[in-house]
Amino acid sequence: MTTIKNFNLYSAKAALKKPIADSTHTLTEISFLVLRIQIQKGIVGESYLLSFQYSPQAIAGAIRDVGQLVLGEEVYNTVKVFEKINHANEYFGLEGVNRWAQAAFNIAMWDAWCKTLGQPIWKVLGASRTEVPIYGSGGWLSYSVEELIGEVSDYKARGFQAVKIKVGKPDWREDMERLRLVREAVGNDINIMMDANQGMDVPSALALARAARDLQITWFEEPINHADFQGFELLKNQAGVSLAMGEREYSSLPLRELLQRNAIDIWQPDILRLGGVEAWRDSAALAGSFNIPVLPHYYKDYDIPLLCTIPNGAGAESFDWIDPLIDHPLEIVNGVARPHNRPGWGFQFKDECLTEL
Image (cartoon, rainbow, N blue to C red):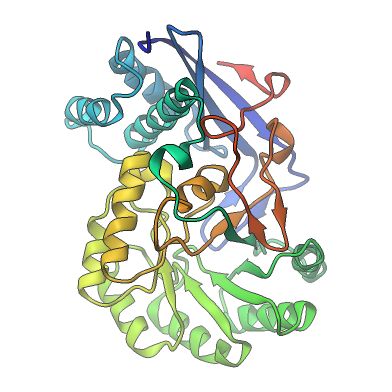
């Protein structure tokens, strides 16, 4: 009896002392929506998405609408349900909040199905490894120099072998100075990546990339608007640094465009935007067919087990935001994470951290 009986939606928040900002957005809260589905065996499958302060009624409404399409389905019919939701949502569009809601149910269904099987998802899908490199992320533009250096130094003290900081100041020379100070703080044995969050134009991104070559920057993430394929092609040919992107994409079509232009070095899928497990793995396979490594966006607790199931998984991103809110945070030792051996995704949010919506 694996039929989906009902679902519940919750909110949760992580501590944030003050707003943080990148080149395009200011975040006033670190908040999440948590979905729980119940199947007739009494098993609960869970998923979560990072919502910040954006459109809370819109995404919650989309999840409830999608949920009506999922009730009564067998929990293992993830592909069937994905296509069913696609058909129903086509009129208003397959991107945006509809896709996030679709992914939330897909991820929760996989959790419940693997719990039914009594196995972690990475074993159900077939494993290629049991360890994944993971880097420390942050370096917000709103940080003072002291806050920036404190964060990257803390990552190094915790054993991380790589850190990523934000760039995209009005004058790229300010970014260059921050990068230089980070290199001085962490030394030459730590990889440094930079992320503009689409906040730069091609000339400034090219100038920063060229100036930062001596700092041995590992990759430049989202230097320009994600839809500027020609701009990515120009930067790939002239910047002299690896280009990473993917977190804003709702399908693999932009990846295909960039691959055909030889304009991408690293693919960064976001499992919620793409629509869930199958879409994430499909995009990774497409990247792999061009020998492009996969380093996903944000969701380490989902990405680590999935990266263990593909041959071109190169690493994952780490924020600590949900760690105090869940029962089994990932263990990270010397910049390496291992997937859980518990059934499903191997973790769930603590009840006391949830507010039902």
